[in-house]
Every structure is written in C-alpha cells, then in structure tokens.
Length: 222
Image 1 (cartoon, helix red, strand yellow):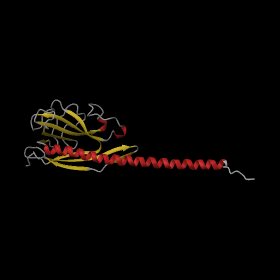
Image 2 (spheres, one colour):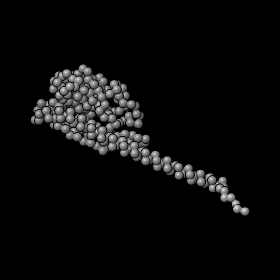
Image 3 (spheres, one colour):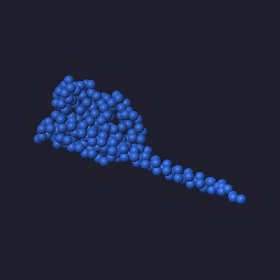
Image 4 (tube, one colour):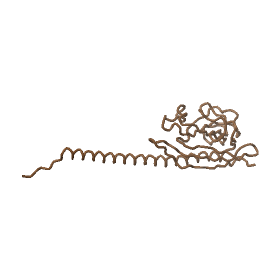
C-alpha cells in the first residue's frame, strides 16, 4: 500500500520561516530601489531647475544699469519676510530696464534676489508661500522682490506695489558674490553659486554645485 507524503509540523514551520525571510528581502530590495530612484529623480530635476534659475539671475545682471555693492542698504517691501537689510552673500539688488509690454509703466524695474530658510516661507501670496515640510525646514529658498521704479538708480525706499515670489526651492547652497566696484561706487560682476538639497526619508540628497558668473553690460568699468 502506497503511503501519502505529507509535511510534518516542523517542516511547515521551516517553510513558512523561509518564505517570510524571502518576502522580507524582496520588500527591502524594492524599497531600496524606489529610494534610489527618488534620489536620482530629485537630483536630476534639481540640477535642471538650478540651471534655469542661474540663467534668469544672470540675464538680469547682464541687463542691469545698477548693481548694489556688498554692505549697502537694500530697501524691500514688508512682504519680503526675512530678507537681509543689506547686500551680501544672501542678497543681490539691481535695477534693470522694464520689459516692453510688461506691467510696469515706468522705464525701469527694481529687483532684489534674497535667500531665506524654507521654514520662514509659510505665509503670503500664492506666489510666495510654500507647503510646510518639517524634514526640509532647514533648506534654503531663493526669493525675488520686484517693483517698478522711474530711474536707473537704486531707490532710497521700497517702491510701492512690489511683488514677492519664490524663484528656487530646496537649496543647500545659495550665495551671491558681488564685486568689482566702479568709479561711481557700483558693482559690475556677480558670481551665483547654487546647489539643490532635499531630505528624503532619513537621507539628504545633494546635487552638484552650479556656479555662474555674469557681468553687467550697462555698468561702466573703472
């Protein structure tokens, strides 16, 4: 008489343990792959966004009729929460020709780029507010204050009707190096350094640093 093969209780327990171990390894592999993919996408997207941001700032510098040297006061509106009071590594102020067909009826625009912590950009208009993200509260944000101004020189007070908006989010590095003062006490050259950074899970992903040097075509040299 043939005997029917059957698993003993011990064999079933061993098989279940092996199955659970295999499932755990597969889950860990999938989770790790997903995390790496998120990091890769975040880094490549950050690089592309940084390049676009650098191009925008550099274009304004090249068009500028006035660039504020470091250490001088840079008036901004009350909506520019946390903006530094003077030009320096965290603030760039300049005056450019107003765009034809733009919102300004004046000949020039006064633009201030400034860097603040992400945790401070939690209120304001739809253009100047970011969603709360505790994991990235210590990252930096590049903001822009823009207002119409009649002349090509820096205003002594913040012009009325200025607008604030977010230019670049999730930055690990964002600095301005404004130099090369001229005979009329203005600067001509700006070096902008940017690097993206984002905390995903328990790891912080950082992009390579992009450095852009721009020189004004309209500010005379010494």
